[in-house]
Length: 114
Length: 111
Image (cartoon, rainbow over all chains, first blue to last red; front, side, top):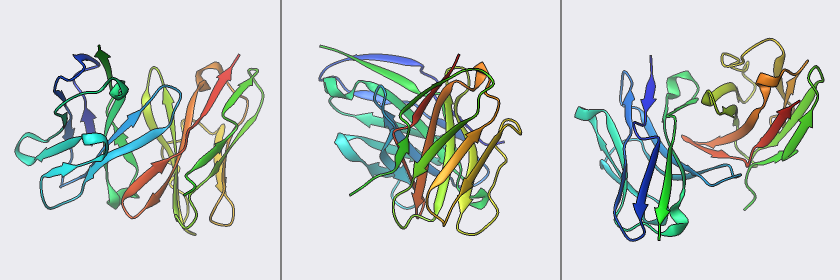
């Protein structure tokens, strides 16, 4: 069965420090992979996506993610975190052979220390 | 441009009552999805509409849940005889090519 695992429920980083949020997936083929961010009381905003091609993808707000097939991972990174990045981050996999419904990880809550 | 909109933003109801949640997708997006976000279960797929095809209802948790999409645009998710475990945020998304765009959600509280 397809699944997505985000091992870290909560991460705290200092403002200006680098960030890496982990995501591992289980899927039979090359999946469509997404990172979304959710601020309190808000919906999900797309940060970036990977479908094929270059395994390092750039997103909005200075985020990037790298697809590593051998590790079944799609980790999200940012070189310097800003206080406004505090939010919950969701990794998701989409299967367009099954209508494209997304399977989400449990989310990682990011706190930023001043 | 206009994104996905959902109404109401918040809904408080009593156990046993029926509720209707509305989703207005982005114009021109032919695929529409409903998800539920709850503390215990995370983000779960509920139902999917694509054009005139029969909807994929495989994620609906019980027969108290139903949804329709009229004219290929607006969708309504109906929960009959609400239970306390239905309390959650209900998110709607519409899709353009492979990317889903989410609305702000409806926060449902069943007392």
